[in-house]
Each structure stands twice: as structure tokens, then as C-alpha cells.
Amino acid sequence: MKHLLKLADLTTEDIYGILNLADQLKYERKNHIPHPHLQGKKLGMIFSKSSTRTRVSFEVGMDELGGRALFLSDRDLQIGRGEPIKDTIRVLSRYLDGIMIRTFAQQDVEDLAKYGTIPIINGLTDYCHPCQVLADLMTIREYKGSLKGLKLCFVGDGNNMANSLIVGGIKVGMDVAVACPDTYRPDEDIVRWAQSNGNLLITSDMKAAAENADILYTDVWASMGQESEKVEREKVFRAFCVNSDLMRVAKPDAMVLHCLPAHRGEEITDEIFEQHADEIFDEAENRLHAQKAVLVKLLK
Ligand code: CP
Ligand code: NVA
Image (tube, rainbow, N blue to C red; front, side, top):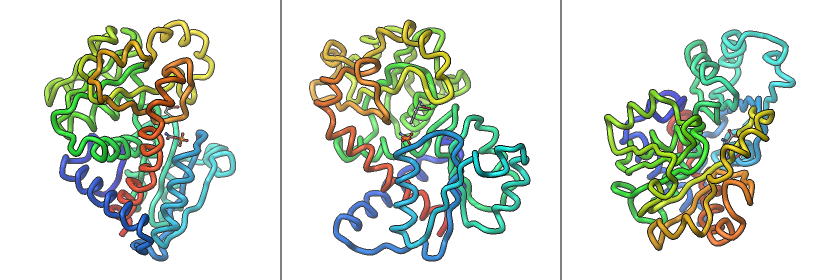
């Protein structure tokens, strides 16, 4: 494993290797056992979109591993004024030991890996959000004990989260169901891959998707970069809400997860969010541990 560009590039063993190390790092942090695996290493963090969790967890994570992180906004970098990404990465490769990038086009992340000589980590693109799903799998395993054979149901937009949850879920042997409007399906190549490598249901019938689910997962109706589609999306997605009615068809002990930030009253009711707040905020915390594991695997 040289980069983390998308979960499709990882083997099931890679994923479990990250989850096991993440559990260990979480234990060490809780027990104040130092783990300076990345002493002297420097991570550049390029952001073309907002972030709370990704930015802070990578920065704190590098610090706890003995390294340091540099926050690089594309508003300040010459990328924002048109310097090609392939030139930028050839320069940054001479200063840094790794890059985490949050941007729009997946191709930009792939290009960083192609033209640079240091590990590249995808901190969210329009196409996928692999770091989030590693933390999600870690959280599900904490609550349920194992992953294989569980049913994960995603409700909402067939977006970056849906794409990564499908790939991650199928790779660890989960059954995945996505409830989305017909015109907002996940990436078709991912759907084809998943249906020939595991059990994936795509439907606009929310209750069919959520039936007997062990985990219900949702995300915002309009992602970053889709602000101008907000009104239109509110109409299309109105019914795609995780509420008490939907919870009744899932397993009685079903978990609810959300990558955050959440829009209560849209994709999830305040009631269900608060009932499952412990799971959701453990999930947010696990971003830190899962990413520290990724950083150790790639930068050490
Ligand atoms: N879930 C997530 O990636 O959060 P941020 O956008 O705050 O980084
Ligand atoms: N789908 C959301 C996820 C945020 C973590 C977005 O891209 O804005």
C-alpha cells in the first residue's frame, strides 16, 4: 500500500491491517502510552473545501505520532492561481513526507500520486471518502464485534459516502443496500463491481433497503460544491430521512451512523440523531485513530 486514493485500491487484508493498528493506537492513546512512529515526518494538508473533522484529526494525529502537519489552503497555494497540480506535487515531494488532500476531482488526487514521489491520502473528493469509511468500519466493529455478514443500509444521495461505503462494505463481506432516488444513484462502475463481488441492493424503496439492517447510515442531501442545487435536492430527497418509522424495519439493535456534519430535520430526525449520538460521536472520534493508522502504514 503506497497511497490511499480510494478503497478500491486496498485489499481486504490492507483494510484489516489499518483497523487493527487503529484499535491499538486508540488503546495506547487512552492509556497515555506514547507512540511516536513518525518522529520528524511532515504531512502537507491541501484543502479546497471546508473541514472540521478531517483537518483537526489529521493535525492532532500527526502531532501525537511525533510529526507535524502543515495546513495548506488552495486559496493561498499557487494551485489557486493556476499552477498545475503536477508541478505543485513535484515541488512538495522535495519538502514533505506525505500529502493529504481534500478537493473536488478524483483525477487531481490520482495525478498527485502519479507525478509525486510521496504517499498521497484522499481526504474527500466528489467521488469518495475513504478515510471516513475506515473510521466507520472501525466503529461498527467496536459495537458489533465483527463485520462480515452484517447488513449496512445507506439512505440518501448516491454520493462520495455511498460510493466508499459500498466498496468498503463489500470488501469486508457486508451486505450493502442503498436507498436513493433513481436519478441520484452511486457511481455505476462501483455498482457493477459491487454486484459482481458481493451483495449490493440499489433501490428507491427505503423500507426494502433498511429491512433487517444492522447499520443505518445517512449523509447530507447536498454535498460541498452542490450548494446551488440545494432547493432542487430538498424536493427530490424529502422522503429520504432516517426517522423512527424507518428504524422500525431495521434490526431492533441497529446502529445509526452519520459522517457529519448533519442537517437535522433533513436526512435524519433530531430524535434519531440524539438517540444514537454515542455511536455517531464515537465514529467521529475514530477518524483520529483510523487516520493515525493510515499515516503510520504509509509514512513510517
Ligand atoms: N466527515 C468529515 O469528513 O467531516 P469534515 O468535513 O468536518 O472533515
Ligand atoms: N457528502 C458530504 C460528506 C462530508 C463529509 C460532502 O461531500 O460534503
